[in-house]
Amino acid sequence: MSFPQTFIKKSSITGLFFFLLFPVLCFSQNSEFILTSSNGDSRHPYWSPNGEQIVFESNRDGDWELYVINSDGTNEQQLTDNSFDDRNPSWHPTRSQILFESNRSGKFELFTINVNSKKVKKISLHNFEFEPTTARFSPNGRFIIFSAQMKKDEPNLNLFLISNKGGRVKQLTYDKTRSFYASWAPDSRQVVFFSRRDTNGENDELYRMSIFNPNAAVRLTYFEMNDFCPNWSPNGKRIVFSRSVKDARPELQMINSDGSGLTQLTFTLNEGETQAAWSPDNKRIAYAGYRNGSYQICILKVDQ
Image (cartoon, rainbow, N blue to C red):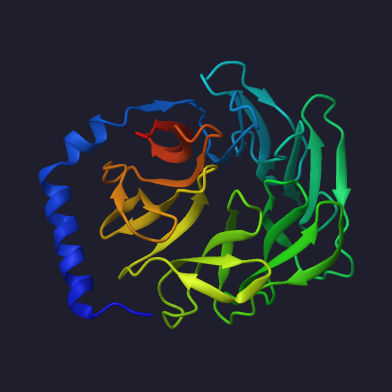
């Protein structure tokens, strides 16, 4: 499936016209709240199951560690503290347990940490030789999906699936470019991710895929530049993602789960937003926003 070039050009012109006329109006309708104010970067936010807390990574002390903060910006706490990198956290759908990647064992592997006891447990990947990244529990808690680079110095990232307890790894995609950063649909049967499989390795586009039929992925976006870091809303209706903007940092966009109804959420020019994550009630989006020289964790209210 592809769109004619005339459609793509017309869409781009229309989007530019809309952006030039209405940036203040659109951004004022979605007020931003900045949660963090650290000297380093704070990135990859992920909501707790009850929507009261957000876990994220930060390099404010020289390496990447995990932190938790209340969604109103209070009671920020450091979860991990070591000389290694603990990155890409995501919450278990029902437990006080956070999944993350760390190189504390010499290479990057998957671990969980209990928010209350701080107990860390390694997830075994049976005979898996590559380093996992951006791992996520499925909404039913039964599976974990993650990405891994299969050759160093080559952009061949692919998606892999394991049970929630680890064990044998199932490869889902076999792209020579990259398929990366999967986010679950609420049915725990589908994911959305970004890939360069149809763009000669040049541009990232969004795809929807069943984990039980990965060969039948459906392309959702058609854009001259890059669409990346998607996140599926808990009600299954919408997908938020970042879109690169020429001569500026990326902005947050939103589409329906079938790829229709494109809406731009932020208009911050050289600030930029990425790594968005929906709150459990579908009313807020947390993301990494480039503010005053570093990335901070921000929240945007979204109209229903």
